Image (tube, rainbow, N blue to C red; front, side):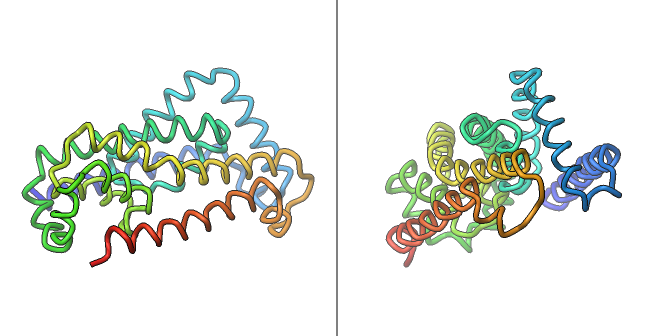
Length: 238
């Protein structure tokens, strides 16, 4: 079962990645990637495309995000994209809802079909947290999401709660609320990159980092890391 799952997920992920890369490179002129004016044109095209049918594009992004999470995709790239496409506020809302829903679907599938395999794979390593989560599964899962999943890859974060047997309601809402601070920061970075490209005539990594749209979320990220370290030591250390 485990081997078949790995083959299926790996093949599906590779196919989707190749299709995405094909679409990406077929619509991008590689010879112009070192020209900042080209990125400005892309930014304009993306803004116009998203703006012409906002609700439909939000729906497409929702579906894409759910599939991405089901295939154990990374979190940060899709958060930056949602910020670029929809701005920090709508982007945060859409990404929090879609990724929380995708994570819930993944949790339900994993819990129903692969519970024994996941317990064999992760149960021993994380057994020390089982009693901790039993005390208050919503509170500890919220804290787990808030601190970034204790450094665990995002795909594994979404299936790890299988060993804690957390209810679907608590899983969804603890994830949803726990995601918000981190997701808002990444969406703000995406929106900041979009705004920087739109208003700048030339590119400079220094001016990008020092722009208000970027350094403010970076400061927020550092503050979140400090808070997360405190929470991690308080709740999850032996």
